[in-house]
Length: 344
Image 1 (cartoon, rainbow, N blue to C red):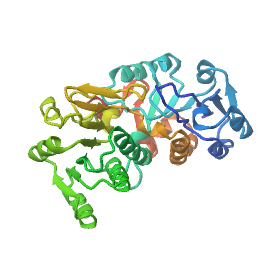
Image 2 (image 1 turned 30 degrees about the vertical axis):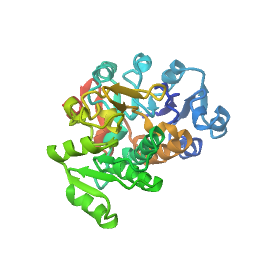
Image 3 (image 1 turned 180 degrees about the vertical axis):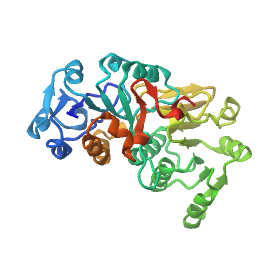
Image 4 (image 1 turned 90 degrees about the vertical axis):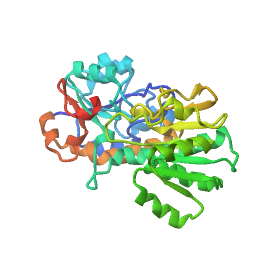
């Protein structure tokens, strides 16, 4: 198959990342026919068009020109409404999709008959969603940075609901700031017992309704980050639980990309990140890593490179389903949903 790579400029609100940085273009230049990049696609990550021209990329003046010339589209975030009509049956689109609950996006990609390969469902040899893993660390760090900016009272009670990669990164940032009143709750209680051994002053809780209600009642700051690969997030925090939080408390819903953890969570932007609900504040920005455009772009670009090279080694689109890594990423192909989790 002849591959022409296209790197569009991201248009999701306040998205500063670019999918492939110039140094990584060099790894691809002999693996495909051409590499096209939309003008100024890297500008918010401190990369100019000249930086891309120097490594052999071809600049396209707009999105239509890019999509017309390229058949392998490498994105950061899910296609936006303005891009739906540009995606055709000849396209393979590789990026974060977070389809679960986004039925407009699902229907648009089904109608396009394109092949959609989602970063977030590609698994490594340890069944870790490895591309998402790298971005999750940044999301956790940035979530804690936002929480600290909102109210930096180190005596506040801060709780982490879910202690995967996001929760751990946010926790480490909280320790760096000097917070002492820290609580962790997770479905895997054995995992968080190890944290208690290192930090005996940390309070740990097994996930159940009583413990969740207790933490909602005492926490001034909550960072929520439960995650099921490819599935819509369970809304475990209902209105009654939200109403038990202290006055002016902050809930950062890092799971918003997959629908959010609370019954009041809807996506917001950095322009207006907070939802006011009664006496509390909900922070529901879906692209938290984009605070660090250059850093996040480099991490993302390096993490997708091994899988992008696997795609380029395939003879045609049908070969992709036979790759043990790429097949997990194929959520939609030729008008068919292959990953049923996105509609469950």
